[in-house]
Amino acid sequence: MSDFAEFRAKGRAALLSGQATHDPPIVAGARRWGAAVVLRPEGEIVDRLTELAATVQAPGHWVHGGRTLHVTLRSLEPYRDRIPEGDPLRRTYAEALTEAVTGLPPAKVRLKGVSPHRGGVLAYGHPEDDTLVTLWKRFACAMESRGVRDLEHGRIRDRWYVSLVHFAGPLRNPREIVEWCDAHAGADFGVAELTSAEVVQFVPTGRRMTVRSLERAALGEESDGVSPGPHSWVTPRRRP
Image 1 (tube, rainbow, N blue to C red):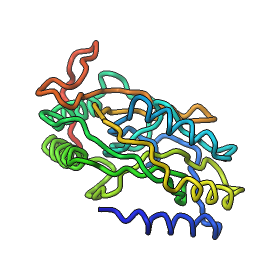
Image 2 (image 1 turned 45 degrees about the vertical axis):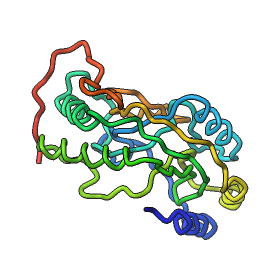
Image 3 (image 1 turned 135 degrees about the vertical axis):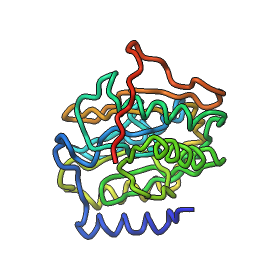
Image 4 (image 1 turned 180 degrees about the horizontal axis):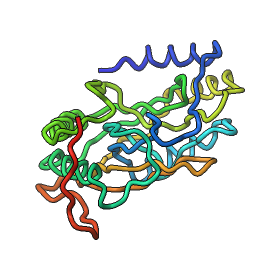
């Protein structure tokens, strides 16, 4: 279980001491913002997250809302701006995700608490069942069995969250950001029921980041969770 109190203290200290970081311009091969597996909340909880994030004074930075809000299950690959339907790795991700979700119920996660960190602001996720951890382990095994490595390289995810803000340039008002986080440190957005997992591509638009769904697998179904595409199945390329 992650210690959010320690995480929050370190985040506040980093911002107040001028140690904030920000995302550089996204180019092909960058380690951040490549394809990933995520779970996106739906309904009123998204509205509450979006409305609160919109009140933070973060000009020039990426303030997230709506369908951009997500819980990351696993980062998959470096950034590339085009991932076509018949891409071998994309189809491998879809196969592995289908296998991983089979028989699992939707994940329930309470989103409560807001915290600064070096690169932005996030809302804490507190799982109310074992689905996220089980799905994370299953997907890792399904990828390994197909000979595909992702960007995580053995990383153990013990902290779940939804990012509200990513710093896209030097932070000029760190104290104001910290004070905003302090004011909303106990914000309780409610319990999100995450009913599907998706392979997504992040698409920068200059002023914000959008999320494009590539493949989707529904939780709570016994099989065939991935939505079919118009192209024929491609035998995946294996890589070390």
